[in-house]
Length: 206
Image (cartoon, rainbow, N blue to C red; front, side):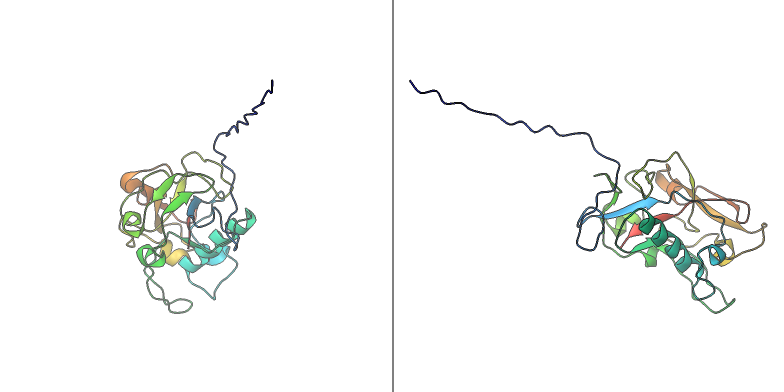
């Protein structure tokens, strides 16, 4: 009599990790997925000073530098843009207005870092309201609700922009979103003095 042994191998799948999953050949997270995070660091509203890239670029561009620095520090590749708007400035050099609606390319869907949670399906969704809270930082760690500089209303248009994100005057205010906010609150929850308030940034992979 012959006995045939059958070995069954069962693979157990663990829970979802909140650590970044590095993917594509360019080092971007999650392969073909695009991602969004809220920065772990916070800054006052004078990005013109804090990015270390002044006066060669304008406030929203300097917010991009802060997003890129955060991504690099977390070992993320790809290109990152801040969700932020400004009216434009003539000092120290002339810069046209920049709207968050125009700054972010239509390359979604965007997922929270290290998760399969879709925050925005596409740009049309981005110009409306999120499907989930943007409460995970560049390291894949969930944050409690934090204020986020946006200068932007729902729809991606400019609101209060901290004097083109370069003010030295604490009487000037900027628009804040809330990282655990849904509806309009994700991007236009309140406003606050720019020089005495520290807030985070939303960073979108492009």
